[in-house]
Image 1 (cartoon, rainbow, N blue to C red):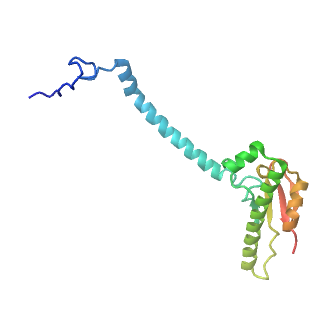
Image 2 (image 1 turned 135 degrees about the vertical axis):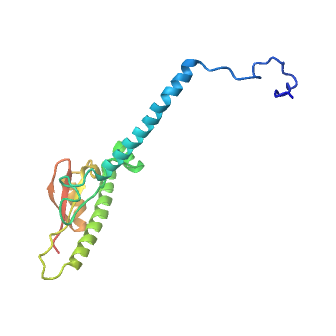
Image 3 (image 1 turned 180 degrees about the vertical axis):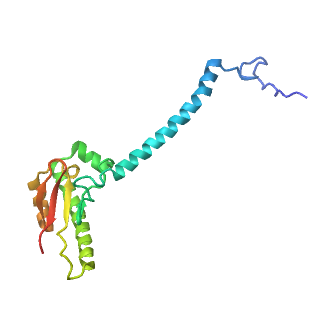
Length: 180
């Protein structure tokens, strides 16, 4: 009984496409054998580095001056300055002053609404005889107002019932809610 297959019609019996596969070079086999652990190690180390980068990006601002954890009633406009989406990429690359103004206005609207809701919730839980709560504060980070000055931000915040309290250079512009 023969293990070989019959020769297809029109193909010579001694065709190089038939028969056993050629031997591989010893250098190539050794490179594959010794390189496999390095490739696996590289993949593992790469995954660990990516995981560490994600954790640092997500938690990197916690506890730093001007971050969302710096005191009661303080909110930030951006939770992460590391990851940017397509809209933000287009804005960073080719954004006009009007587009930055619209971006900052949206960030202010969302952040002030969240801060006001959190403040109302805290005030509802506080008994009338307790120490009065401070007015809520927010920070409009530099990454959310690239071409806007503090005066521009004040003009955007005024209709929302907020005012600029201080400017922290490239870090952010701090705003407080107007007293009710």
